[in-house]
Length: 137
Image (tube, rainbow, N blue to C red; front, side):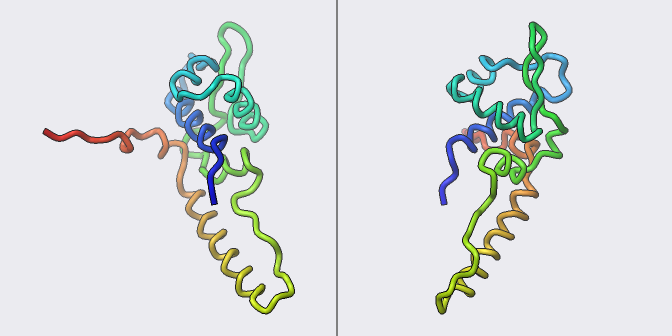
């Protein structure tokens, strides 16, 4: 399994928007692009997907920009994955082979564990700076 770059960027931009949650000043594409090192032409597509998924809102005009549609605590990684990729982990239904039932059951179990874990991590968790390296002297 490999996470798409689009999904990674979506998580980053939502974390950045989370830092502005509740503020009257809404970040524009240019500032989001610069802060997260995401090409602005690609960021437009990601923001559209996030808007269609109901995770962000946008305002036009001079006072416009982008904002989270909900509190950062209420948007999970699961919501982001579904909004960007459509599903968390797709797997085929049980086939006809001797091992198909056991194989399908294993993937179903993995999918359920992944679902629970991604629902437990929120945008708020992505906003923390604990991932920054610590330097000790």
